[in-house]
Image 1: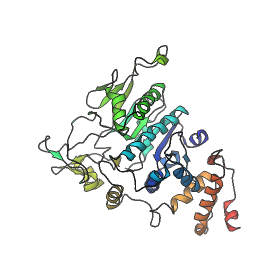
Image 2: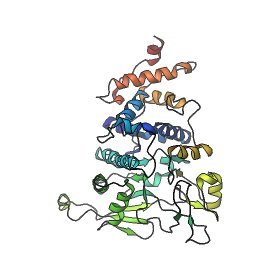
Image 3: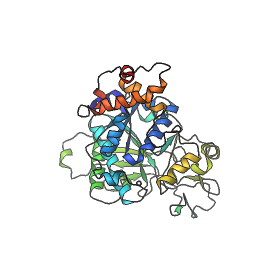
Image 4: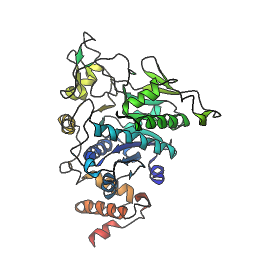
Length: 385
């Protein structure tokens, strides 16, 4: 993992991390295709495989994937019909994401984390530049608080999606248990690692998803507390003996992203309280007067329903034939070229998929050392032979 992180980190020491299980692999491919369209952030992406099937599948395709120390072990559960929002199997897998981020930070790197169901409209590292500098200290995180600022009566509830219950708009971004752990920027520091240690420890002994524990540790459990309507101060537990002589800052600042710029499924605008998934990004931006950086496809139950509203908005970027994850189209060739120094000349396109998979098979044979240590190979010649 260390060599993979070193290869993909920005000069400021950040990687773009996502974590995914085998049954959500097509969402991973869609995220990759999305990032390719926007700029260079894809080059800084690393993928935490949350089960061994995902790791093997990713390695076979030359993706920058690693297997964290915690993963799912039940293959029958892993490749089931899917992890739906609110279900117990979804809650179990979300807890592994913060473990993966902590492992990356323990290796010495900072994290921009994005769930695979996030659609980016701007290049992540360009849009997040103020928060990903060498001297960045604040933990920036997406709010998950429902928000419908244009409702005439703020007490009136609205429905983010037919599959979920009605919710009420919240003026503050840091309302109780309304942190979204699916998108954040975590500059690496001793205090950030301590915060994630406490989050993962608390989540390990409870049954909820990891969202409530992000809020509980960062904003609610004393001595941590909220600040105004848009932030928190994380303060380590006073009973931690390992911190008694440490010269750490007194707190870690936590700030929520602006919800109209980083909307989720329960951010709605207009008198009818319509989300970015109903309006589309152009109409949403026109009504808010702000540029949307991303849209997080949550507040919805059902993997097919989640995919459908991305497809309906033309935010499903996998090329035809790649929906199942068996054909990466242009993505596979790009990854193979970057990861394995493959020189595929013009006119060799018909063999790119074969070269790509050969690269993956060679990588899989070197799993113990990490596929990023694979020596350069003339894959064109190997495939033709």
